[in-house]
Length: 324
Image (cartoon, rainbow, N blue to C red; front, side, top):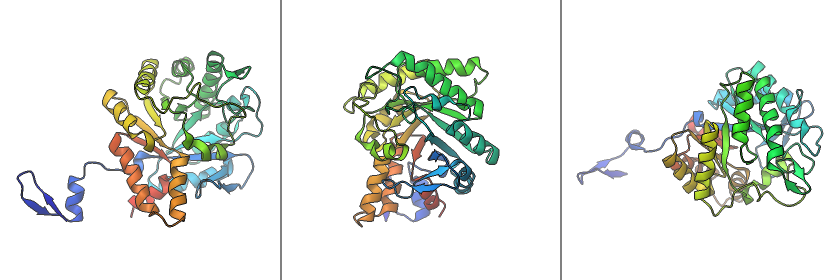
């Protein structure tokens, strides 16, 4: 290939020269790998709608951590499948809950791994919604105290960062307050600041068994048509003390990632969600696309849009590719 310089001359390219002029780069250090943790021992259960992604038991986490860190993926985010559920999601803040035990296992066996935790109630409530219900409606204010208790329990177990994904108004301030009051001022909050009511979450809901039993989440997640609302939501989270702003999903919302990058100087995260992952896997299985190339191009586009951090089920595969 040849490359036209700014004076009209054309310079012959090789791979080294192409790397020198490349505008966007991606490395394993930019990636966060999601882990689904379930009860039992010796469990490694593939998720049918997410080929290559597994539910694992707590005793398998050390192996996962070793593999991730060996590839240079030094951060994970945890999602728990509890033994029992109830209407208030009380298992989410249990001292010996699935995530609390997972954090301790990872910090004991891989102390240098950055352990982030999802803070939400949907995996723990019998009705599958992200907050406390009054009748069939999620009550924002009564949910805040519970979410704060969840975040505090994660910090007490040793989490390096908490990530509230519920989309309740005011939850960042509530969490920041309880963490500071209990001597955890250094635990950052990666807020799901811009989380759309998306159709791309289906495989995740299968994986975490957290689909709503009635209704939907449109009353507290965002309308996919709105971008100015995204800026308002992110601004509120910044004012409440968020340290990192996340956009979810990623590929269908690259314009939103770009807008946040332009408007805010905080780190921007993007969640390359289960449906985005599953579509690539399904098309590749049919032989319609090259999985490796499409994976790389997809994640690179998220970085190009402005994301500093990418949460992706492709984290290990992408790291293998980058490591050669």
